[in-house]
Image (cartoon, rainbow, N blue to C red; front, side, top):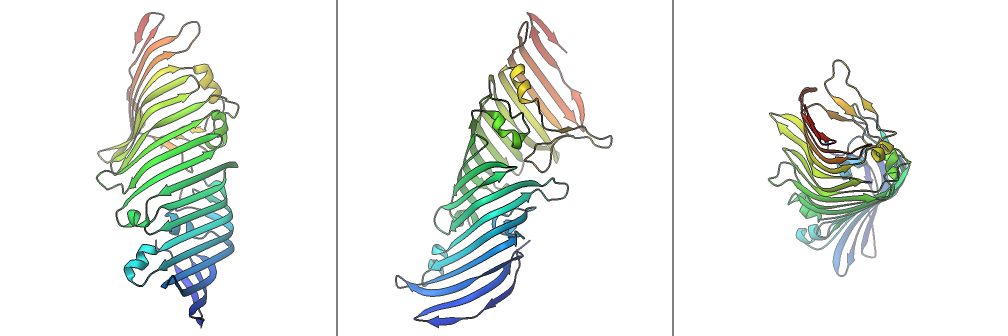
Amino acid sequence: APATIRDASLKVTIENGKLTAPLTATIAEVPFNGKVSLASEDNKPKAAIMLAADKSDIGELAQLLMNAEGIEGKFDSARLDLSARGETIRSLVETAELGFSIAGASLSYGHESGGRPVEFTLDKGEMVFPAADESRIYAKGSLLGEPFSMALKGGTFIDNVVQRSWPIELTATGGGAKLRIKGTVRQPESKTGTDLDFDLAGKHIGGLARWLGVSPKTKAPYKLSGKARLTGKGVRAQIDKARIGNSTFAGEMGIRSENDTPITFAKLDFDIIDPEELGGLLSQPPETKKPEPEQKALTIDIPIMPRGIEIIDSDIDIAIGRIKMQPADITRISLSTRIRDGYIKKAPIEALIIGCLLYT
């Protein structure tokens, strides 16, 4: 829904060729105070609006600025700036710049119906959207008590609003991890959709315990890289390389639509699996809810997700070159599973154990 502006007041004064006007307004349910100014800069008229708010609820600001729903909480200070310079409408549009900053915010997301709120803080957050220059977003804070920082560079405001195509480059750190995402964000209904390259790496996966629910004692290094595509038909991730300690795999996974029914799919090829090492990783697994009698979905809860991952209909194909075991490794394992309406339709398994081929 569009953000509301109400209780606005304006009193104009002109002095030395400069127009200024104190301004108060409630925007997106947040009370702001500031000023409007109009003056000459480099022999061109410049219009500017500055609004500030202190010690307030977040209201609907997140929805207004980021189209993000279900965010609640408070902040210490926030500032909104809008400026433009020129003598024609075209020049005003081309030089327009929107800026927003926030500090001392204690917030949570996931307040939609059925969601579980997830707490985060913003020590500092900044957004700058020039009409014809690179957009920039920066944030530093904590997520579930774990410090993080992120920086995003994007296309121009015109790219996003007019062309509906926004090239982005994001870097983020937290929990010992480094994340890089680069690509182009487009509307899901477009012909090409969103295309992103991603790379995630860290020295100790236990550093992500607060976010993923894994054991904080796990020291295994990890890496995940590949490409993702999001269209109106679903999402697909091509995993070029994935590693957790000694275990490595590649493949693809995602969600596709089949007769208007979302189907989760995964086709993964493991070179090697080290169960002892992975067992340490999952010694404190994310909570998995078994479906109640009237439910058909298996739900996996992850701390940073307001809602669990529901698995109802899925196609899973897994090939494993080697599983490290004692006294002998298991090799050439394959598993193909089809699940519909929460029931396994078929799940043939094949494996080579001490030279004997076993299958079901």
